[in-house]
Structures are given as C-alpha cells and as structure tokens.
Image (cartoon, rainbow, N blue to C red):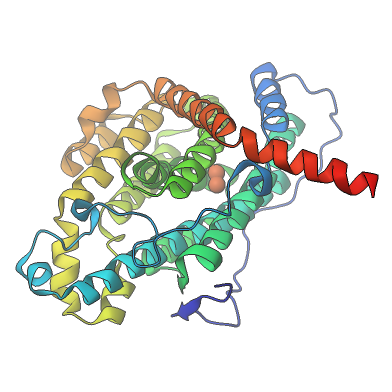
Length: 365
Ligand SMILES: [Fe+2]
Ligand SMILES: [Fe+2]
C-alpha cells in the first residue's frame, strides 16, 4: 500500500502571501546562552525515522492505530451501537486517516513557519535554533507521510480549522505572531494529540513514533517560551491586547474545530449528529484537557497572562491549568521518549545483529 486514497485535497496546492521582512544581521557574536544551549541540543538530538522506527511492523489494516473504542468519537451513542462491524472498521480507518492527515499538514505548516522564523527573527542565535527546527519539522512531515502511505492508506485534505489558523500565522507580518501561533498554539495542539497517540493507542509503531516526535516538539515549545518571554514584558497595553485576542481566538478554534468535520461529511452517517457527538465525547474531553495543560502554562510563562487573558481563559473553563509547570511536562516527554528508545533498542538487538552479519557476509563474497 503506497498510494493512499485521497479525499478532499486540491492538487494545485495552496499559495498564500507571507508577511514580514527578511532580516540579515551583521552581528555574528552570538550571546544568548540559553538559546545556544537549545541549539546545541537541537543539533545533537536529530534522529532518522528510517533507522529509529521499525517500519517492517504490520498494522491491523482495519484498525491501523489500535484505537480503543472510547477514542472513537461517536462510540458512546445509539448510532455506533447500530453500525455493523464492517462500518465500524470504516470509521476506525477514516479516523486514523483524518487525524494523521492533520498531523501531516500541521507538520508542513510548522516546517514553513520555522523557515519563516529563520528569515524574520532579528538575532543570529535565534536563527540558528530555528534552523534546527526546520530540519525537525521536515523529518516529522516525512514520518507522518510514510505512516499514511504505507500503514493507514487514506489521506484527507487540510481541515478548515487548521487552515484558518495557519493562514493567519503565515500572512501576519509580526515575527512574534509566527512564534505565538506556531510555537505555542499549534505546537500545543500537536503536543495534546501526539501525547494521546503515545499513551492511548494500541499499535506499537504509532506509539513509538509519537513519543519520538513529542521529544522534538518539547524543544520547540521551549524555544517559543524563551523567545517571547522578554519581548512580551516590553509591549504596550494595546499591543498586548492584540496578542491576547489572537491567542484567545486560537484557543476557541482549537477547542471546537477539530472534531473531524470533513470526515463525517464524507462518511455520511448524518454528519451534524456525528460532529455533535464528537464534540462532547469523552475522547474530546481528554483532548481538551491535554490541549490546555500544554497551552495555558506557556501563556503564563511568556507573560501573556494579564486580567483580560485570565478572564478569557476562565470563560473557556481552563484558567486552572495556569498553575501547572509547563517545563516539567516537557521534561517528562523527553524522559518517556528516551525510555521508549531504550526498550526498542533491546527489542531489536537481534535484528541489528543480523543486518550487521549479512553485511559482513556480502563483503566477503
Ligand atoms: Fe513537528
Ligand atoms: Fe514542532
């Protein structure tokens, strides 16, 4: 299976104007020690999905992610109970396809936005770090593309929720909006979704892949935190209000617009009812909890947490997440990825030895 079924994609691609000026700097004396240490980490922790993941693993074609029933958004309903098993399989396959397609397009968005950061950010140390992120995001696009093509077999177009958000971020000319939109909001969406995949699905390839990607994303959020923290301390009240409005609008969109709308229309079991069920499902509640667990502490850390922001978060019902320690959550992501890597290494030691032995044989002949 190498060519997936493609649903709702414009083959012409998507062309949109990029906001912001490209800045050269002649100050080559890099000095921001914390950014530089993040850059060093970014260089040293690159990994190759080709080698690090076991792509020979065969997924269950009817349920490629091993989705537990409570994670099928419509599972707690009369509609689901009435669906024959064959149709349930279709839902599981399409959910995997829709979700991983949004991961794929979101990663391409991150690739483009981190390249935009390289161009528009004034300081060389930040350009250095962002360049490592460009490479990380390219590797992530590669991974989700491979997962969709070789394991899931269904690819959807970009969802309108993600499209609107990406469009605002790419078009905006202010460098900090690229950071805020990508490094805080969309990375928050990614962290929530990938951590659910890592922790809750049954398929071992999907779990390992998301654990490794999360490890990279933890660095990206740390970059957003470092870059914005000092800048937002200096802004005037009207400038801050602008950023708060942007962040709050994005929070509402992330909360409500990722329920598989295009997929439910395509499947046609009564799209409105499916979307309504998805939005109030236990899986969506867990997604929202994880989403705001990631986003709200970061908003606090970057000093975008004035009375107006707190009031907006209260209306979303998520202000309490501001008490969590965002840096500690990122460290935990790193620890889990290291652990998965260690276990996989033991699991595959035999295979690696076989490959080395075969190579040695071929050399002799
Ligand atoms: Fe990524
Ligand atoms: Fe990222």
